[in-house]
Length: 114
Length: 138
Image 1 (cartoon, one colour):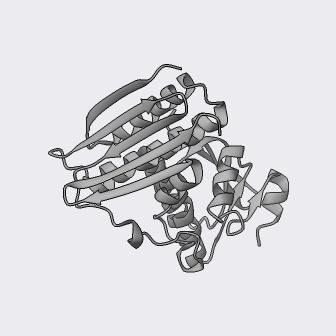
Image 2 (cartoon, rainbow over the protein chains, first blue to last red):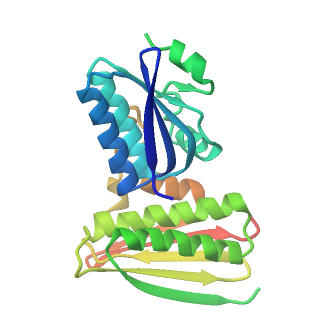
């Protein structure tokens, strides 16, 4: 299943609901384009909801990292929500779990943005 | 368990990466691995295939990727070979080092080593061969 995304606004935070696979090719490019589009519109509080992302490869992880640093460099915040076990375990073994701000509750995640 | 060997020669495309992953998933399941190990094996193969297609062969349509599976009673052995310049494993930076943590690439080999029981990387002037082994009995 290729990646799909949709966005919604909650209390000034843009929630990006992602589903499918974030992998080399279509998935990783879509994520990159989505984040760039949001930043171009001045939307700098971004919550990536990965609850329906069932697979990510190292390219997808690279895109998450790229999105994180790009948003941060533009004075924004990017956080992750609802990691599946697969994604959680990969971020842990690559030591990225402590780099990202990972949340498991949407309301709490939205409130945590500055 | 019978001994089984199968080999494929594939183009340097993204489709090959997806096919390699699917084939690995199927072979691992047939070999009797549980769901978690099937996931680990197929992901390791995917990462190796990405390295072969993207970094080794640079999507060159004139260069091929060879993917071989060998199943014995003890192991599933997967070999991926590209026709690139040869990867020097000693030059792969540690993705866990603080200075590399926020790099957007460089995690493929690390993931492969994390998920497989044995990994051999054999570079040569005609390409790189990576051999992945998962023991059937852990």
